Image 1 (cartoon, helix red, strand yellow):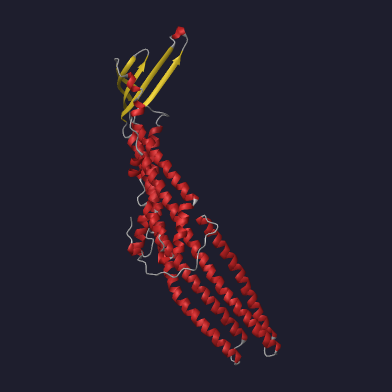
Image 2: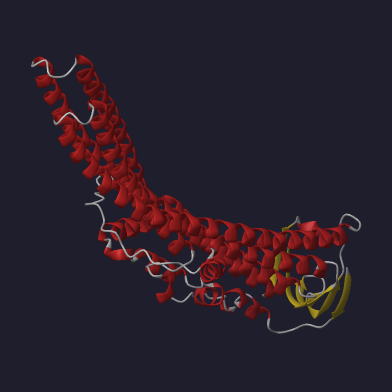
Amino acid sequence: MFHCISGGRWPFLPALTLLAAIVPSPTRAQDIAEAAPTGVQDVIAAQAVNPAGDLHLGMLLEQAVTSHPSIAAAQAIIRAAGTDIRTARWQAFPSFSIQGLWLDQRAGSQQVSLIVDQPVWTGGRISSSIRRAKAQHRAMIAAYQATVLDVMVNVSQSYREYHRLDRKSAILQESLARHRELVETMERRVNQEISPLADLELARSRTAQIEQQVATTAAQRLSALQKLRELVGDPGADPGSPPASGPLAHFDTDELVKRTLAFDPGRQRLMSEADAAQAEAASTRAAILPQLSAQYSYDETYGHRAGLVLKAQSSGGLSSITNAAAARQRQEAAELGVAATERNLRERTVSDIAEYDSARNRMASTRTARDAAENVTQSYMRQFVSGRRTWLDVMNAVREATTAESDAVDAAASASEARDRLLMRSGSWPFPVQDRDMQ
């Protein structure tokens, strides 16, 4: 350490005792203005609106966002990161060192020493620390956005899954009622010795299979409902009646990929972490350089002194140089992580669009198959009575009608789930994508 001190007694010692009280503190408003979330409130406001007028989904999403503990934890981390910004800013302000000695009378009784050190030039160490704190704050905001997005996607999927199972349960109940009617019909025919006992056994077997499906679907429906209630934090949450099908428009793949890349919180977090790594590398390089400070000191021996102090310090040999190299490598790794995330986002978005388009196409074909299967079932019943169809033909037609109707429900639910994911992950909630610009 090199010192350059100019001696002399200064008359302002009493004023120094007030210095800590009058130094202006970095304000919280300034922190929020400089490192505030870009579009966080817009994310919540946009995603809380529901597509296709589905009011129940909108209310459940709002409940989940305001009550989920992981979101509250992410908010707490953001507040802690904001405090880290203020901590970094305080490095530019004076530091104080006060020492009091109580010695015996022969050694000179009481002695007091005071040192006030004000950084003048640090080679960018302080500014880099502030930049790193701000970048880490932005990363925490992006992590918060990612948590909100994950919770809302899970709520949407659970909501769609519940209504899919609810509708399938109703279809199976209708099928079970129809099968029981067929069993009663065949019992009368067997009693009248019109049909063989094997036909009755076939009807009973198919009815037992439907009963098993009804029980399984009811259990799955209850599980989906419980998952949805846990997500929204309300044990009595009611998903409401099955939602009406919203408009299923065509998505522009290139535009949606572009929006997803620009919005994705995970990518934003990695970009902020890359900025933080860059600032850390700059701070580590600055640690190698000397630091210039203005210093005031007072003690019983020398009295008041003020001057400039040039400090050059190393620890662990050349560890500062190797630390700077490691910081640069961490920066490169973070930047490569951004590129890898972009690839994954493109792949996932294109896959979701393919699933969405496939489900839309299946919706039309399954509706046609459902109507055709119902007509075939009615026709086979008439032909069976006239002896032109077997009982096996009738039972197979009833099974196909149930399967076709169930497939139509699955296709509609799959299309809705894929649409919700695409809209949420691209920041384009509510539907349609073209009606909202990215923030």
